[in-house]
Image 1 (cartoon, rainbow, N blue to C red):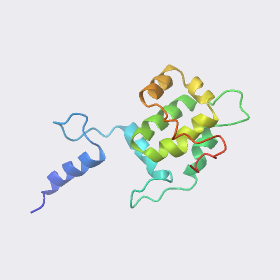
Image 2: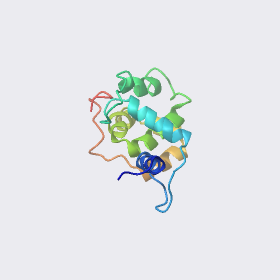
Image 3: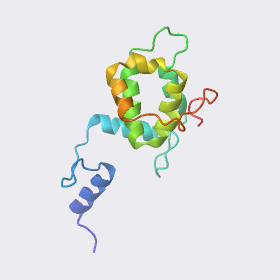
Image 4: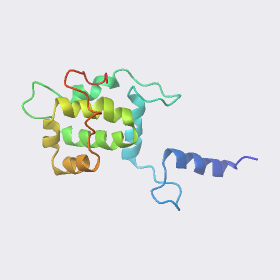
Length: 141
């Protein structure tokens, strides 16, 4: 016999949003986490059934953050890069196809993001074998 609807809802929620403590359930739905999931599901490279990615999203990150004609990274680079790092922790295709190539091609984004960004990179370092070479365009690894 299956779970009642309430029990099924709690189980389903726990699969999508695992609790931070093992003896708790119903992890809060923080807006940043929902945004990360939206970004990941919109970007090609995931294998979640029922969510068709938008092909535009494959190159949108590079277009928004890596303006090669700008003297300095855009003002939103720090926040966007932090979101990419956090999203990439749970969604590997964001790390390998978006974040790593972006940093490889535009290391100045890390410097512009400041201490918070460097602290995040220290917690979640970029594996050398995962980062593409400069000859690989972003979104194609």
